[in-house]
Image (cartoon, rainbow, N blue to C red):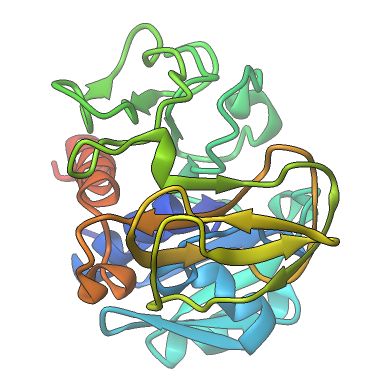
Length: 267
């Protein structure tokens, strides 16, 4: 198979799981785009951290921040994934990807990605918000359950349930959310053990407390957030190794993306 240029919109947890799987499968020309202030919570498994640190490694795969589209090739030459800050997608006017993956996980209607990036060879959407084949060529189911990771060539993904994945019987209790708009300040760090009612962070002066015992698996950086924004994640399993390893959900979605690419190009 010829070397493919792959663009991934987003560099958060799910997008990074996809990029990691593709890079590990020897698709090494990967460019990811991200916001200037990423909203990533599971930062130890997200290439979005390169926006702040300049580089990020997830399970042996390295990503580096590109200061311009012209710097991408040099990053690829160093056998790393490139991450570009571009909230408006302006770089897509100069890039002709073989594969474009919208993994921003916005979970609301986005319209036709194909029309916005007509030069892309294969367009894949992750989760709800797309219709195939009108908006994208294929959709990857992102809801946990029987169909997680399934490739959809005609139709839509399941609606967003707003219910976090079940870990040891805990769902919404695991997630920390901003009680109002404001600036985040951290009290705990990723990997710290917490008890129910421990203060994990503040939004302005309002404490955000753990609802369960567990390990802090994810924690947003100190940025300004909106009301109800996800700002933290407590894992009741207390397995610290989970903090720095890709989740089963991200791996399943990544498998669906890989299947779609192989279906199109492995001929």
